[in-house]
Amino acid sequence: MSAAVATGLGSSGRPGTPSRPAPARRGDRLAGLIFLGPAMLLFAVFVLGPFVVAIGLSLFRWDMLTPPEFIGLENLVALATDASFYNALRNTFAFSLASMISHLVAGFVLALAVNRLRSRIASYFVRTSLFFPFVISWAAVALLWRYVLDPTFGMGTYYLERLGISTPNWFTDPQWALPAIIGIDWWHTVGFTFVIMLAGLQTVPDQLHEAARIDGANAWQRMWNVTIPMMSPTIFFASVITFIGAFQIFDPIQIITPNGGPDESTLSIVMYLYQQGFQAFQAGYASAVALVVFVIMALVTALQFWVSRKWVHDR
Picture 1 (cartoon, rainbow, N blue to C red):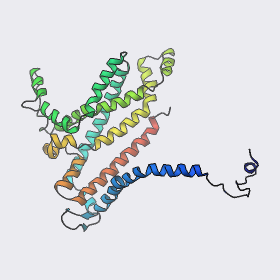
Picture 2 (cartoon, rainbow, N blue to C red):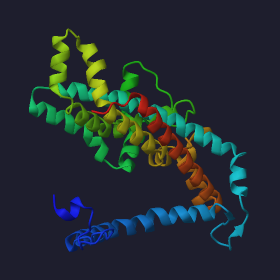
Picture 3 (cartoon, rainbow, N blue to C red):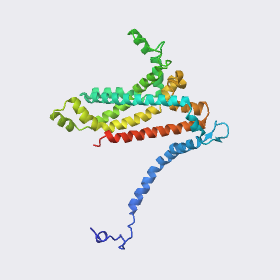
Picture 4 (cartoon, rainbow, N blue to C red):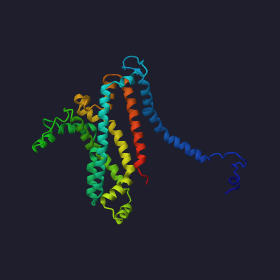
């Protein structure tokens, strides 16, 4: 230890004089700012900027053709009595919860099954097959399933009827429209959750399973007491991004059941925002809907993080 450090003196030898950062450190900070600059600029233009504009627009009545009229909080007050808004919110929560639960369960089970495959070729084929639907665009997926489940000439309807199974009008029956959309979304996106679960599963140390097996734990006990606790951070991450993605569902609903389907049975909150902003030309009201959606997603995500403290285990 040098005398200057031992006596608390600065690099100049005088007490209380802070040492100046080396030129190399200042250069590193400048380089960091240069690399962060483009990302921060894009964030400001495409995220922060529109968010601030949406807050401002929510205080106005504006049809995008005439000058905006300041009305304060009237848009938010109108939302409180909007039956279509509550129906869209209810459908969105039902879709998001069903999507999150089905994705987590199916993704975890599929990951367990694929992780047990001994053949690398078979494992690669199954992983590719499960993930492939995720890379297809929503437009193609929606049109594909709209044809497959068509009640008149759909391939799926035809084979189900050949098996003696009567099929409903999937997209025109209010009781079946939303479950059909949930099933299509599951087919399209479960591969992504599966890949996340498989990656988390492969990080569980084999030594823990071996130790539990030596202690006499059976397969179920090893899964419940070793696999799931060790994968809890992965499961938590998958639950958060799955819920956020499902809450913003729009494409398949717009393509398969335009305008929210029969009796608004598939009307989602993002579709309702689209209708108000780009069909009814109520930009201020649509901005108020967007703010409510943001607050709801933030609260749900915060709740998930708070609950995670009780069941997510740090490795």
